[in-house]
Image (tube, rainbow, N blue to C red; front, side, top):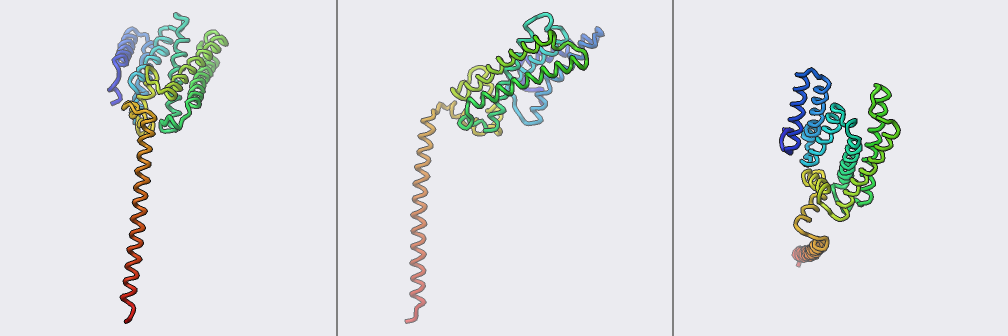
Length: 269
């Protein structure tokens, strides 16, 4: 079931949404109730989709998704946190950009089966940055479309709000891309970089090479150790090839002797 194996924070957010939605409907505040149920559905959707696609999302990363949706939709829109706290919108944009930067890194590594030797760190970081910024731009287009079509006020102060959001998105995307670079270049696995490693280890069928490399790192093997082991294997392969070649020569000689002996026996006296 997609409801299992989540953090206590995630379950607490779901409980708050259920209680707040029921209370809102009792008090006939249908807008708050509807927003609460919509937020609940959106926070559960990634877990449901991951189960359908046979993906295993790291627990703490999923918690971040739930908190982001809770803060954006329920607190931000229903309880007007965007108006109460001037920094609320900037904080959410920055956090989401970092998250999308990490997602971009994971998606890029997916093309290389997670092989850090085949994926240049600077290229992965560049793609991750572009992915996160693109998501931010698409969101700003969505806000503009909603304001123009339905008369909402998602852009708040207009151009200044849009440009401020895009600047924060670029900074957050840069941070997320830098984390991906650090993971690949220096094998850093502390904090958010550990999310990348955990995602690869929990989905080994998509990151076969990368997960093997991570397991080797956990065993304390260095590049020199792996190169030494590979060198020994190559030497053993060459020795086996030499033995096989000698066996083939012996077999050929034995067959030639057998043919000659048969020919001598067939010759009349």
